[in-house]
Length: 264
Ligand SMILES: Cc1cc2nc3c(=O)[nH]c(=O)nc-3n(C[C@H](O)[C@H](O)[C@H](O)COP(=O)(O)OP(=O)(O)OC[C@H]3O[C@@H](n4cnc5c(N)ncnc54)[C@H](O)[C@@H]3O)c2cc1C
Image (cartoon, rainbow, N blue to C red):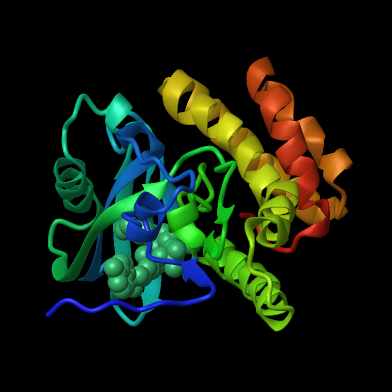
């Protein structure tokens, strides 16, 4: 059965493969090098948890990305990883995942698996058109360093909802009106994502394991000092061991933590 439907305003929040983005005139091109290829599993493990989340980096573990282990409570964990096809010689994510899980806990029981892609791209320039907005992964709004996109998608959804509702109330959902969403996003989280992308390109595309070791050790010192002193500038001394190009890219990101409670 073929049927049609019309709307004065549509929010395209249909995820990474977005039909709305690809079917509209908006900017939503996806390329393999804009993505982390991910595999995650909920597992039952006898491995003890001290309730902290764990991250693992390195070319052997997850080239161009990272692996994670999040304790869920009881004896369950979410473990997974994302890799960058540009750095993994086209070896699929599941090969790295199986290797990682065997090291994490060879006795783990897999309860559920989720495969998918996460964003590692620049902010899109055009996410508002006549009667249409793109939101969340459909608009490449995930953090390109972490691939995390839930919080950004929620912030974008809130902004898009407010701009869309005002436009409908005034009977004008033209692009000129909806462009306020695009402008506000680019000025705030979009600009922050572009800073993260510079870091992501260094971390995942340029550096080898020795650089990563220095950087994550320095990051740990930075966050400890910030916790102790409560001040970002005071904690920046910890960044002295970082490669100079990393310092240039990282300082604007670290400074923006001054007023944020959460890391990403
Ligand atoms: C393995 C993995 C682990 C992740 N872990 C984290 C994490 O720990 N933290 C974090 O912040 N982010 C994480 N992410 C990223 C996060 O999942 C996404 O950034 C986030 O879900 C984006 O939200 P969204 O609403 O834009 O898209 P989605 O959550 O993908 O939602 C899109 C929805 O649209 C529906 N849809 C699609 N097409 C159509 C259609 N034609 N008609 C009707 N419905 C349609 C889909 O079924 C889906 O329900 C992870 C991603 C992966 C792949």
